[in-house]
Image (cartoon, each protein chain N blue to C red):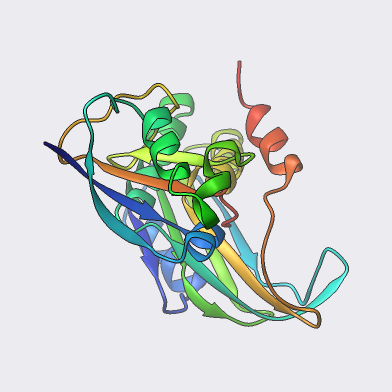
Length: 150
Length: 85
């Protein structure tokens, strides 16, 4: 269940192929890719920088995947999250989950992404037409994570 | 003496003007809330630290609470709500 935090871009096709390769138990693979938009909160965004807490980030992501594997019968999962300077249309994050059936992998993929948004120590600083600013956390993200509570 | 390593991230790092420090805790400071009060007592840009809304804290890279205890050698991190993904 690999977790990678890196500056470099990633090749979604190659990553998904590697995740499922040679495992005939896998009947379903769900993935999500997050991208940099050119607008946020009504302002044009020309670039962003992602800061993180080295060490804790990897631990938090591993714990989130661990929680997903306890809740659903998944076979493997992968999270790649980029840090550093990113431009609109750049890829930020890849979450991919494999399993026997689609129900588990769809749910686990969404769960991992929702938890990542509220629990993994990353922070976005964006450059807009009005200057640079740290992105505020969204209540909607907390609500998205909260809905997984029993 | 109980020395802890303190890390600051993102907007909070900019606010306090540093990313990392080692601090000897005086007797009587035994948890996260106590450390925050100690830092806020520095005044100036530190003053609002104990009352900042939504301030998050981790001790040894696990999310912590105001009453989480601190021990010698702990790594304590303060940061705003996360915004990755």
